[in-house]
Image 1 (cartoon, rainbow, N blue to C red):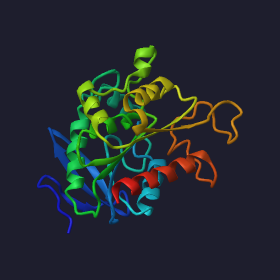
Image 2: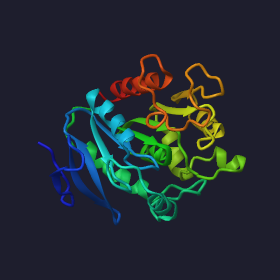
Image 3: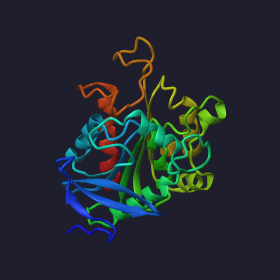
Image 4: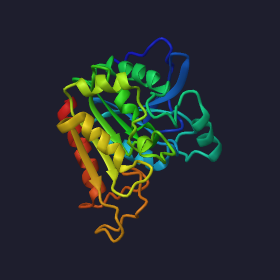
Amino acid sequence: MLQYLDNSSILLSMNLPGYTEFSFQSDNIEHSVFRSLTNGPGVLLMHELPGMTPEFLKLAKRIFDAGFTVFLPLLFGNPNETAVISDTFHVCISREFKCLANHESSPITHWLRALSRRIDSENLGARGVGAIGLCLTGGFVLSLMIEPHLMAPVISEPALPLLAFTDEAKAALGVDPEELNIAVAREIPLLGLRFSGDQICPELRFATLCARFGNKFERIEIDSSPGNKFGIRPRAHAVLTNDYNDAVGTPTRAALERIISFLKTNLK
């Protein structure tokens, strides 16, 4: 039987068929969370800056179809819609997010860590929780890694800090140094994805991850150079959503298959 915290009200979501919706509050932050009506190891899947878009929900379905219970926190905007400009502007100035900070964790990561503990409290037949962050939320996975139950972290095209014009900012991870040290000290693997020509997630950012995590960091970098074999646009950014191609043999399909394998190995 599912157990929910006292501050969580559960209902069948009318916005997202196949999910239940509950409200989760921690550290004076409250957001809706959608839980797939499946039974398997829990995976916290965090949406990107455009919001909980149809493309993002297709990714969520691919993951729960692979045998996982997916938890989708709605950080802003409306489910199954692309966030409007006012929503994204709100994110950039919100106290919950530190979009320009090189070495500070966003306050929303404390809420996400509490949510991950809530997921771990369910009896899902797993030895821990998985977490996947995309774009804006990519680097949040590093803060989540300080939780001992987080066993399968995936960081895809981490975009913070935004507007990274200097080499220092391009190499930064947007996470508190103490939290990063704890994450690095853990003996668990970290999986990362980006397109080779992505300027929102600069190559120097992945170089930092390689330097800090060493051989614990598995780096998947997809060729998006002009004239590449699969016709991927040079400015491609969203590996698993907007720039995803599900055709067999494509590098983005292979990247998703690696994520599924990674989750199964580290959670089941």
